[in-house]
Length: 387
Image 1 (cartoon, rainbow, N blue to C red):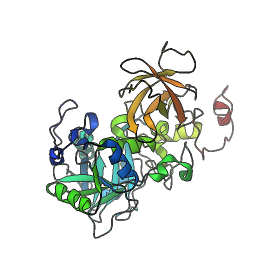
Image 2: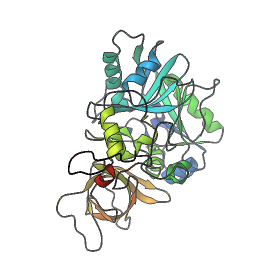
Image 3: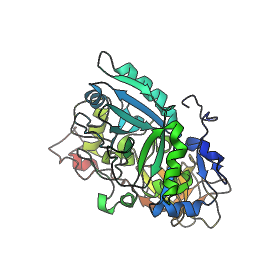
Image 4: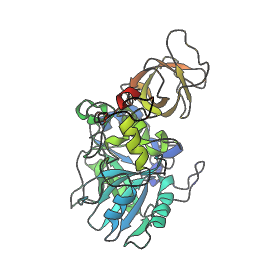
């Protein structure tokens, strides 16, 4: 399962044998993109009556008495007192604060489960193994033994259920902060989501039990459309080698600002204090009249009446979806200096115009940025003056 390349994954879900199943591609290769009716699948997901095969995701397990304090010390999240069956998420940053790994986190009382992208499971497990030194922890890449299924349920797993990770997005966690709208005004507030971990050999049985209860099996067309509409960042799509969490509003759920030092913490604190991260996430509402969709990585330019894709692009497309209500939409990462007006997005067949919905404002200040206490550097004035 974990032996794969970007071009030819070795995993193939048994549910791809279902009638009408169309295989996914890119980071969702190995499971179904849809099962023949993506619009109906999206509607079932929106009605909270759906189950998704996400068995292509990676799973790492960490056991041992030091597991929580150790993970607390080397990642972005406060995990020292994490209670069993309480979900959160973490980031692993490089020394300059760039995102290297992300993972959903839940402890079952005996071990911590980390759910991540399939391509990151083995590298994450290897990095953790290098970092354990003499501490009492054991790291296992459990991807070959454990499969994830997704369901639109806003509840932590109980003691009678399999290990379950409830997506905390977009609820601002204790110690976190936000650049985007308040939790109650966030478009992600209506997207309940959790991942249930089952033995890989019981994947089909777990899905069938939910279908017997009236739920519909849906593909990643539906789950990704819901994620994009919720502005939810994803490691496999929104992150590149320059990404810092502020750019994606990821300090809401994945970063604790008041815990002790960890790799990359200096950048997190500096950008939080000064504001103005180099780039910012936005959502693009694409003109669908020409039936053109951009590919991930497509260039983005300033738009408006008579605008042409000239000069240097101001950003790139990271995720694309056809939403059953919103139409064609995309998440885009833009330069901080890009205006918050219309955009042009490169497509095979010509650039299309797009309306922009700002996720991280251009000034890049969080709601709780510390007040200025005086000059920072000669000629720069106060922190407020830097924005």
